[in-house]
Image (cartoon, rainbow over all chains, first blue to last red; front, side):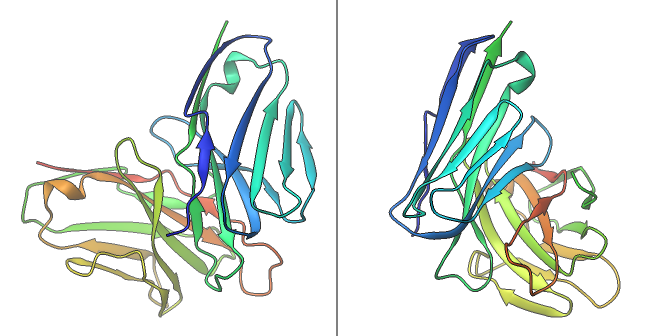
Length: 113
Length: 116
């Protein structure tokens, strides 16, 4: 069974602080996606990274795909209370030809005002 | 959630009843995926369908669960003779047709199934 390990599982910080969430695996992924999920709702796609070493920025969020395409990170600068939520990474295995996504367990982020 | 529709949003069934969950993909999307999210767990892949075809059902329980995506109408995930352990949030996702460079999946709001 392929696994994506996310860390930390829970993170509680003050508004204005920076944070990094990690997503690691022993498998190689053809692409990796980051989602954010609010309680009672479905995951919302934030970004997709495809190329090893790729860096993408979305306002205060910076996403990086590892050179070997086995890991990824999400860095949030100057976190806001509106960033509170569950962050999920999901990878499409390179060996898969069906496109199914393998999800990490998620990181629950709480940003206090 | 980018136009993927799921209904009902909440479904309560007694043990032994049947549950039918519906999913209408985003306009222009022909690939549908079903995932299950158990309490305190991550999303787990169940099945991948295209119109009138099941492509990958490796995540589906062997018994009581079935899925279809007919030529017309929504995709249906059917659970027969539900048990308490089926209580979970069921999410549908859709993606564009074959030929895409990256498989970006867009999720619906989910159906929360409670078995009493």
